[in-house]
Length: 241
Image (cartoon, rainbow, N blue to C red; front, side, top):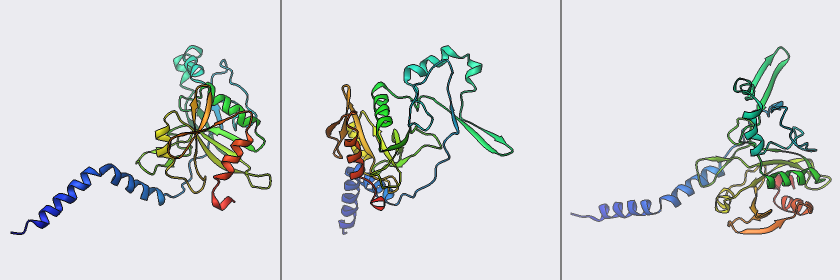
């Protein structure tokens, strides 16, 4: 009796089990290459937050303020009674002349001190037209297909820029990430519409660029925002060049 076919199947099964992660990542990479652009829901018309917690004004954030910090969020329970907090929800109101939507500044929006410093630097950059935080798991958020996982990810910042003064404004994606290994994994797929997602990571009281292999790159000097423009322009989608 010829046992060769059985041994071949056993060997194939062993290879598949041993290489399961690599095969899984290869499958998701192939799926990512076929990802289609799908419109998210429109952003809320307004964002609501307790009047007693003053948010910092922002010149270029689309809602005119820096999103709340975690400390601001923790104060909400002390500023509003539980029944009043029911008004702080994502909600759409229907009127005769159209819908009006409000969004809630919940924990998916909160920024830390370093991210707020980066937000202020975006406000000061001449090439930035507008920006906003990109909250996780919202129907109106930008989500990106990962090339090695079945989950999506939500880059932290959507920034509308002019790559040069004669360009039309274009939206780009920036992620501030503590885990540089995860940043390297997320960087395996670049959405065609937005171009390469750029990753930054905290390094003490400063931010550094994350290279594609997960290693740390140069420091981003918030007083030298043209260096950010140079990085963005070098990675813009080909169709916008």
